[in-house]
Length: 199
Image (cartoon, rainbow, N blue to C red):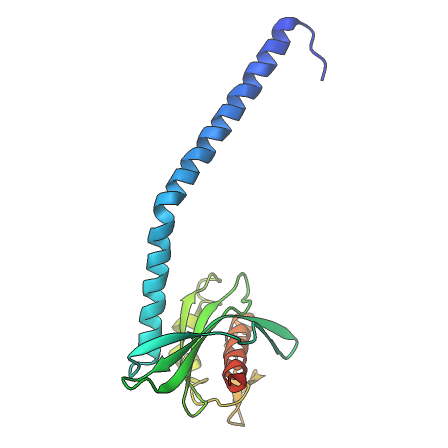
């Protein structure tokens, strides 16, 4: 860039320094805000997780984090990330089931969900921690109770179908929300596989 006069050079430097200063101030403000809000956000997420675990395994007196599980499970042609596994224990310390946090890819983003698997190895419930999908369409996986309950009792990976199920391991997707409901079902299948492979 060519400058015609010394005054123009000074003006350019002044503008550049001003922009730099503004950027630095904004970055500092954001850093301070994050410093104070991050613990609050983390605590809120933990409380939401604790509530979900207790809702899914109401008889559990404690939950213990499990290690050594498979962190990515292949379901069909999809890889489902596994974020965490919790062993649900009764008052005596006996394991009465597991809760698996999985994050399958929905239509527009990941679906963060927890799948409860009872001591018999069957799905006993699902809780969605977070979902960002199309309102009224993809979000139906969170509001359609009939669809949500259709995975209960599964003890093997589900077969996704578009019409009425004819076998006990078949689960019908939600019409108009095929991608998100398929992701939900894949998440359930991944959780089942993880629990089956635990020692």
